[in-house]
Length: 229
Image 1 (cartoon, rainbow, N blue to C red):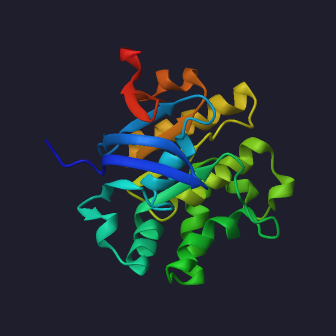
Image 2: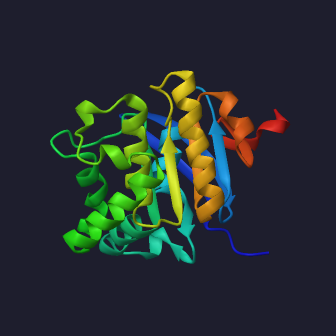
């Protein structure tokens, strides 16, 4: 059996507020295989976004370890961790976080430019991935001229343009109507099947769990299979 793309071992996270200690994650273990889609369901405030940020090296755990491939995050310098995030991890957030002054194409070019790709190559690859998500005719449109579903597809293209091993999605359909949400998820699962990219999607919507290879619930600071609840 091949090694998991992502592995988390005993991940804990707590926050200190004066004398009060808020415990959010209490020993999370998770393996994600290549090309696997994993949905993590939980109510608001259970720590889903906190977990996602730790898995993507945006936050450090209070205890435990995370690795992508064979690289444990706590063994890496800040520069090495930044390079790993740029090359191995894609992020899609509920609010898109697109730069309003840039076109769809320019937004998707940014991760490639940040890693030192030439403008010409960045433009070529950004145009290619935007075509794959059905936006070939909207390359020069700013976010203000795109629908909510189109903005989310730009965000997905931006996450995928660098060929990441893993894409992390935080409530990716939370601001979309059911029809648009369904089309966005169709796109995600199609891309996972074609490219072998792994996805971890956190949501409060249990209906998404039926679309994934595996569904987990985050409750009481721990991950458990939804079948066990």
